[in-house]
Length: 635
Image (cartoon, one colour):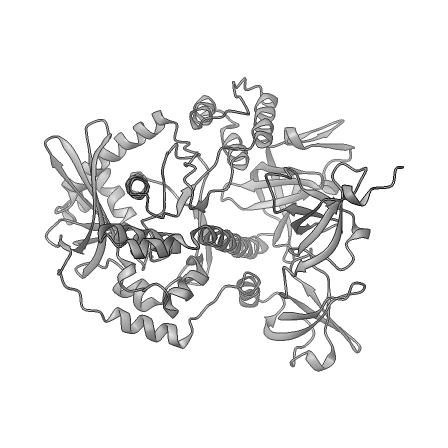
């Protein structure tokens, strides 16, 4: 083999993504130059771990193998795990199976005992041998529910409490007196809020009027920027958190409760500062005009989705109780249906993926049920989308800085996999993987609606799409078939919304100096906010998985109907009607030789095959708390 010339060596930087089986991949930073990831065998890792930022080079003569030159930055310096002491040797076995065991010297145990769930800090990374560390917090006993949930919170670097100075600043800010000076007074307008029964941080209120046969819709959003000044400790803490994080038993808010549940929340019969977006729609739901301005409002009613759904269905009890808003609700329902039809015609992708609500009832029991989406939920969704589009369009026309919410077109590779999967189901779709439009996806969903495999097509389509993110450059929103979109409607719980509010107000006040400041660092802010959102999403999924595993651990031996929701080379994942997913390991399948066909989402055997979407009866065999996974077998 020809020796590689040093001039041919091209280095690149990337992030290590480890695999449970010992090898790893490097995800290059430069996605334009390197379209695919690079493989690193176990024998070439030499003390490099999951999440590390590295300098690497392509191994000459191979298609996709890379050699790691050096570690630029360690991805993980703190981790959670279980302490095991054997004689004089103590090790932490990480919850993340991609990470190595950590040796803990006796002097750095911090009173931790065998089988404790702990948070440990890595103090050294030797090139050979295991890392060393110290215990910095004891979370509880391994297997204890509270300790396991706290472990997830620590793993994702989330904070349960606020620093004292931030709390003091928030409380002082919350005492600000509300006056109508310099803002439009809308307190006489019939504005009300619609949320879930347990919602405490209310961002948005709505109003509607009919004028000359047109719908005049008002979306009124809490003006958080009046209470969180840019550059303060309160602002820095909100930016660091990026988003509120929601678990079944608690919320880790972006802002202290004095603001999130108090001064900023649009509570019933209380004056509040708001940013109002008033939009006019004609009889075809075409937006003909909009206006955005600062206001003072007073919510007349704190409505729930349940109550509004009941009004929409004509429930006499609810219609009598809320007679003052029934006409508004009827007009909103009519506008919602028009907006849905208009978006559908434009190609809006309406994925029918079931959502689940997990909560703990008054008796401490875990409840898991489907989250029904009625007309009230759809109504609020349509109105918030409309306001977000109007604000994005406003900032774009003014050439003002905006953190757009973008959703890019699916990659050609993902599109090809979707096409291959559809063909395997006998669906003859006419898709050009190099030029896909939202309407193409919606046409597929329409064609499979009502078919037995409709649910699985929805899920595979979702997996084929890019992840939505924040960017200073408007690339449109593929899923919504929207040319300009941002997040404006939830500034209490999302930092990008707060950024957008500040930019809107700077435009309204003609404050070019502020706009110039907002432009600086906006690109990095988009990246940071996107990463924090992904981190929060993963933490929420992990905690949901914990609740699901605990729930199923009390149902060992029970039999359920399921649908295959995932196919891998090590088994099949099956999903129950309540959305709980479990694994049937390949060794537990009928004795056969199985070939894994990734592009067809198929585990093919000589006697029997298993495909995504197949219906199966499964029995609960056990729960793997280490991997937060339910174990099924075929019944």
